[in-house]
Length: 296
Image (cartoon, rainbow, N blue to C red):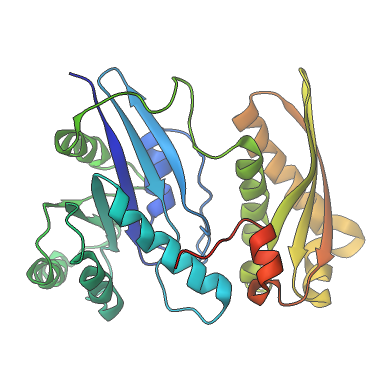
């Protein structure tokens, strides 16, 4: 009997939500970084096998932020839990009990959707007694349907988690045709791959202030031609992104092109530019035009 459904992955920043999605799909579609707030948009990755189709919703990290963008990010993540069949709530194995996680669980008490507690990065710890005590506090705070320990990065126990997810789903149709890997267009994924490289190579100087959009995208038969602009908030950040004699922008483009070629399965010509839009994260015009909308 074929099963299908929707599963949302939520949690604080840097708990491995995007890494888990990539591991489940066995393909990179979600960008990852050690920096918080890497994921800004809710988007779906589509898992298919002979007996099921599962639409996994990768969400931004839930956090208290000061900018309009930060508030959008958290509200967008929490909005997903009301319209899915299952919620995966991720925590870090090495963290003690966090008050912010308890607050998220209070939000989840307002819904009827079943919730799995996922303890990620299990491979990073040795003090299992401390972890056991922390998990017990979480279990006393919320009636989870199940609790799992995994390593999203290494794939440990992810196959077992998938089996239990399927058990929670009801018989249903395919919502997407075979071969679809995301509900977002290629253009969105291309923008994200470029932004990931900016985060990776510019360290602490730029991350939260960067946005990427495509100026043009020409997917021709043998080679796709892409022109994209990296947006930052200050002139000093523009200098960092461009680098001496354009060296940083070239490095970003070279690394991003490799991921884009893996996605598109063809050669890519990528041309990057950089511009300044001061304080864009607090300006409604830019938030709307960059694809961010109010969920309230």
